[in-house]
Image 1 (cartoon, one colour):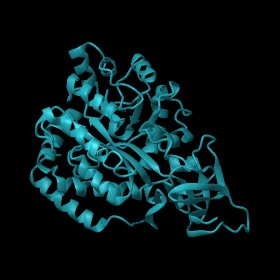
Image 2 (cartoon, one colour; image 1 turned 180 degrees about the vertical axis):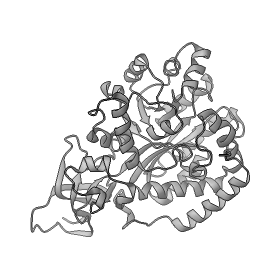
Image 3 (cartoon, one colour; image 1 turned 120 degrees about the vertical axis):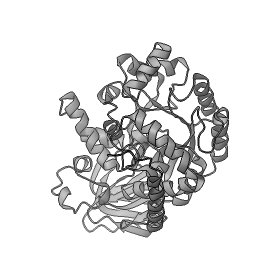
Image 4 (cartoon, helix red, strand yellow; image 1 turned 135 degrees about the vertical axis):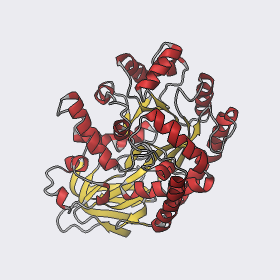
Length: 444
């Protein structure tokens, strides 16, 4: 029996239910699926395959899963740093979006985001933004896997100048892309409980349910949001969303920082999942989500970077390291968020949070061959007593050598095969100069 591809001669970190690690193993691929995962014995001859990748003693693992970003916002990386969320959004980001988020610019920004994510080992991301059809076209060309949510907001937005059409436009996008491309799952993304009315939230959730797609929403992100919702409805943001019947297993709550035990009970009982965006929350001083409590209540929680305007990078290896350390120091407990738990959040738990856990997120026979290979012969990874520990606390996105999605190589020897990175970076730099000329960035 011949395989299409074999990735061999590496430590296989499977992230399967048994957290199995094969010290010297190989992964065989056939028709885009993982067909075999086995250890290698000295002198063993590998099965026949049309192609092969030598991991050279590195780490073979599932691709990382970014459960929340805004891909086109790479255009605004570093535009308005060190500001409160309200000021950042209303004085800088919203005006910049109104001026520069066009179909063409969204395509350039998304290409840059895909390049950054693939080169740092992300093979699946969950996006929420405007003009999402342009995002989808880029993603289909690049070959990365994605859940792509069309943005819904009760203000004029790129592509939807009339807010009365926001849910209809999002639904039309979902219907167009459902089943169109195997690696893209369309979704709806409501910006937040304070930028979407109760009517909009209920309509959007109903549309998502009718089309069997994920419903995403920023929720309980800041103290200001919590106070605003409390003043208007006398309940917390989570309780407010519950009252609208928008919480269920197909809901992704992004951030969930300002939640108490009653809110956590509501989330757990509803089956909703959470995207934890630690670095973005830190940078905007939004607070620290009670991640250990989510884990105690078995709430499925994945990791997200958020968009580059509020985090500046989309390197999930950096995010893993920060998540593990942040929650140890905030709880004064060094055993909280151990390396294995954080790695699962960045892989299989992230995939489960966005509805794709049966397809990807771990190295198991029958799952999609979404794999990455890391070069472990780097000074900062030597010695390697435990690969999972090194992946979380020492590895970097720049250690990634090879990346494949559905068995198709997208990065080989750190070279992107489906994106002209030089052209993309040149174009985005040109756009950056135009954005600066419009003076949206704040004075330091």
